[in-house]
Length: 257
Image (cartoon, rainbow, N blue to C red; front, side):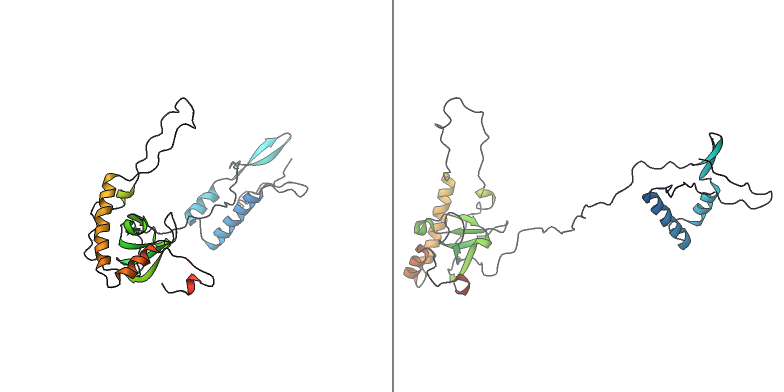
């Protein structure tokens, strides 16, 4: 393709180098390149983006050069075009959520000595006495074990109902070793597959340690003494023994515990 260009007369100001053109309505530049050039022109007019010194420097540098091609010449861009163009990213920005430090807050109704109703787990429906809240935000409760077979255990506050019945446990001293680490189970490492019948092997069930049994006796003895000191001790003992349940026409959101 030949491009005819007139040379400027002697003494006349140098004309701008023309951009290459193509015949039959085809565009020289891609959509991305055309958009980039459009944005640059807008920035140059408004005076934003490129400084005056850089613009003057760009004007001095030649962007196109004329090279011989077949019997004529052709205009070639000195700047090499990129092979890949950036596309619109669909990745969402990461949310700046501040992580909470420390244990979660415990409800105001969950004070030491309050009788709770368990809503989940093996002992759901049973009533227990709240001893204290641990550093993890979990609640330390006991049945006592002698009354309703609920041992000293941790419960999440979302899975309990606080009742209006309270017990004076100011004199109850929970052993200092009962904390979150106290309830962690030691998991044994898996051994290699033993030869023989796999169905003959029995899974080891959980058995409380001697330390845990001793701590249970210490805690329950103090809680039972505070129950005996209560004015309505007979009603309270029967209340802790009886599991919670709803009969026909009863709705928990309309009840006062």
